[in-house]
Image (cartoon, rainbow, N blue to C red):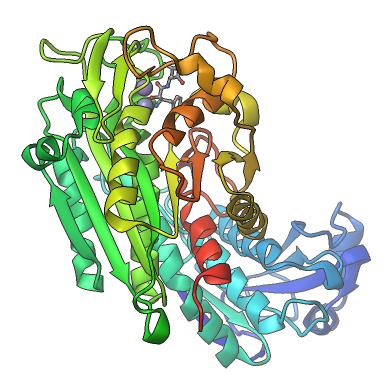
Length: 501
Ligand code: BES
Ligand code: MN
Ligand code: ZN
């Protein structure tokens, strides 16, 4: 879909969308259009549930008095309370509605309104939401599907000061390109996306100025990454560790410690010898959602030339049962030197992250380290699909993440950590075991305690995104499939706090 910005003027063709505020207060353009159509808008409203609430939409087909094919009224709610996130959702809902109607082009007119958010920024957010909603993962469809094919090919957002809107959108667009990369990676099946091919996708980011290194198994063995390698040893596909660096800080800040992001990249998780049940196992193709988010974030930052130094490290493995697979009861030695008794081969993400986290803090001494992982089914029991679980050893970092979540709609909710939970990981014969003794109790927290043993007191946060990486239903800005969760959250965190001018 093409997105454009223009000054306000009524279009002659296509569809027209106009704003209505709370309690059906018409915007200037809505008033004008109501007059031109001899009151069609007012009449339509009186025979519907439309109230001008944020999220309300009302479609009027082929109104007389106008040349456009349809008018869509969109609710803005109370002007003073409008947020950029509302506007994103609006852009997304409009795209969904218009694709459902079979419309080809639309002009969205946003008259000036009084709020904390500038009208031009609101216009840019509408475009951003529209772009997010227009994403499709279609590479494996060999034939067009009439009913579901998106029809909308062009959206023009019109407002006063459209040049500022265009500029604001240009600043958001690379972030959305990053989201799209994450969605692509997460949606790929595991026969196409495995450690080596994933690493090859990362290498494409060199075009944007990202430095990419790929560590193979021999290299990881020399580094002592026994925990990560143990997970991958049953797979015909070799494991990989990818290190991506974006050094965008300039001037006095050029030599700064990097921010580090670490991702779980289990390209398929069968559970290993502790095999998962058959039903739903196909979902484990997206057990690399953490690594996908880190990769998309790197693309976003490089794409918009963020003035910050960032390193992204992803541990890529496939967890398979096999004659050579890791057995329950095996003891592995991690890069940190700590030994781990692997009581359940399905608790593999933490083993991958153990070495990826240790390596990252050891090599880069980062300002902070944030890892993302589809780590536990238990986090879905706790938080559903509304928030990722947040675990941290640093209150400031946790609060900044919470705030970024509020702004982007990529929510996080902090859960507790303490020695009492960590105790569950005591092993009779190794330094720790990879599952707790508490059965199903507090599974996500115990997993976080395990990770913390490998962060070496660096300010750290762990995001358990098992409930967020994939969506079975459309939302206004996220078509079903890989969501791209995490990219906007972390991009916002960096924009707000770490890009010193
Ligand atoms: N990848 C899974 C967690 C998961 C489950 C992600 C559902 C997305 C949806 C993880 O590797 C796993 O298997 N965790 C186990 C841990 C248990 C063995 C301690 C779990 O959650 O059951
Ligand atoms: Mn598992
Ligand atoms: Zn897993």
